[in-house]
Image 1 (cartoon, one colour):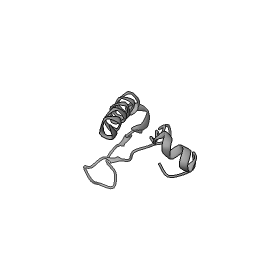
Image 2 (cartoon, helix red, strand yellow; image 1 turned 30 degrees about the vertical axis):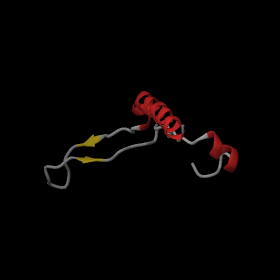
Image 3 (cartoon, one colour; image 1 turned 120 degrees about the vertical axis):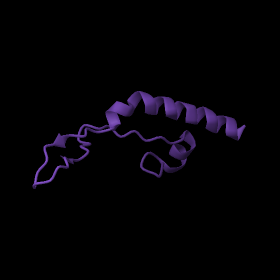
Image 4 (tube, one colour; image 1 turned 45 degrees about the vertical axis):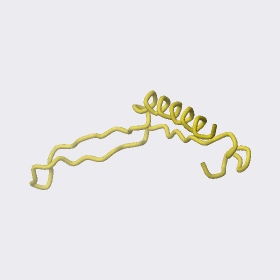
Length: 69
């Protein structure tokens, strides 16, 4: 029974992750080469990203919304 519940929860987690991937991935701006080299400068900007965390109802009941997930 326990493994069945975990499997169902993992399926839902994967579905939500796929549907929200573009919102949590961040942007990857690329800048022209500088400092006399041929490599582009870049970084990942998470300013507009929405973090999504998963936990179980049992853990919420035991630890509350500020407890470990």
